[in-house]
Length: 205
Image (tube, rainbow, N blue to C red; front, side, top):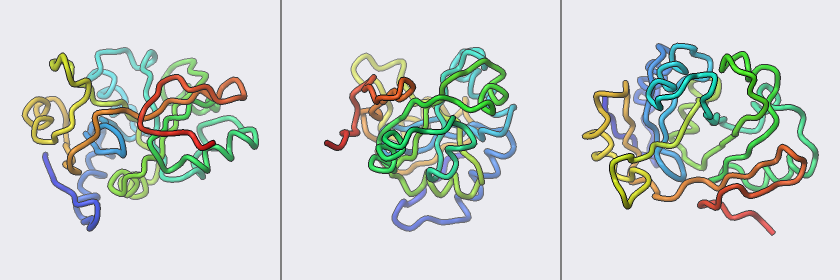
């Protein structure tokens, strides 16, 4: 299914259609505040397996991030944060950042792995946040790469996404043109933040 959602006037019926797809174990292409992503219900083993299959990796080796709607979800999926790190997250989120944090004991159970860290995102995108809130728990995601384009690393045009991937996914949300630059990735697992990849997000001074 391919639907268009206006981020300035979100139709809750369309959001609920996508949420039902998530709950049934579907994989959904979604807009974020950086590049388009593909994701599933973090609590759906069927969805996680489909997402791993889409990426061509084993689930226990998959390197998915999770999208939360706010910082209140953190304690379920990460170990307790030092005050300076928590302050940094509050300054940067919602925004185009992925923070790599120490995973809680819950995370390895979800991914059937010995995962010790997890990437956390809270995008500044009204559609994505509405999806997570309606679902009631985070979405597991990975960036949507354009493997066939030698110049562009990511898709930006939802129509091109549909043409290329409609038969490989369960649901596509057109939230307008996406960016061609990913989120800034910051590793906080050693206590002090280290920028792993420069992206759209600029750290506050």
